[in-house]
Amino acid sequence: MEFCDYFTLEQSAKRVYNKDQLVTWRESMAKMNEAITFQYFIEYTWESISRPYFKLYPSMIKALSNLNLNIKGNQVRWPTQLSKTHSPFLIKFPIDCRDTTPAPEGDILKSLLVYKFDTENEYHPLLFIYAHYGTVVRQDKVIPRTCSFSVRLDSDKTLESAFAELTTPEASAGILAEYNLRELLRYTVGTILLASEVDSELIMPEVLSKHELKFEQTGDVELIEKAKRNGKYGWSIGKQLEREVETNTHFRVPHFAIRHTGPNGSIPLLRPIKGSIVNRKKFVAQYEEEETNA
Image (cartoon, rainbow, N blue to C red; front, side, top):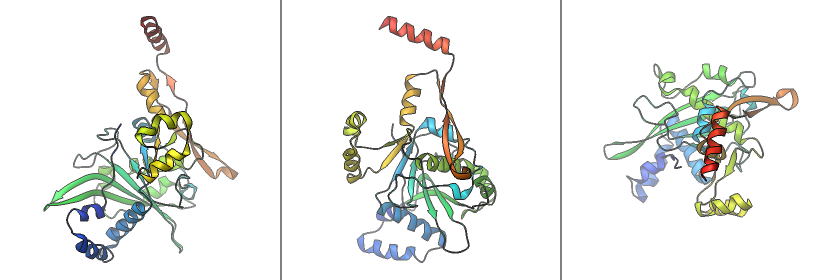
């Protein structure tokens, strides 16, 4: 299964400017409006740490699309897989994925670039999300199509409450409904909760294609490092679950529920409510028939 990527402002500029012009362009980024400057900073930081990502498989997309957001903002822990605290990361969606809400123009969601910004004053941390819907050509320039928004991570408010106070650089009538930002927040929070849990069975490190079988058989961590050295620095979420769905047409994908653990329930964990076999009698009959004909 192939997944989408993210097209940065820098990649767009490289298609237009030569080496000297790029230097001038980068300097100009510091003088742009605050929203563009901050987007460039997040993208630059993400690229400088080898563009880490999480692939979200279709079964997980469906499971997370209705995630309950009633958890406190300060309970959102960052993925343990990332080497630096609050490092930006990308959530990749399958190519031509039809399980997400399209943009108003009909474009399909490609990826989400996520970053947690910790402030040093009285303000609460902010969770920034950049939804990438591909590119558009304008005056011979390839321009990324991005919708961005941020949510406050308050210690005394749930994410659902914070979402009600949502601010977005592209603030306009109906944008919340048009882009279904709540859905994007659910994908983001669900990914963070799953990836912040150590030894989650749903998270698998990415290795080079030629090493996938060997890694499944041996779990050799050196294969992960080889992949990273070759520009493949990521993890898949729900890959094994997807195999179960593909090989068993009667398998119902589990949904997820937040379970509060730790002192005073301060650590929220995302737990799958066990998947099940739908119409078990029909499934068993089909299995027995296949075994007889084998």
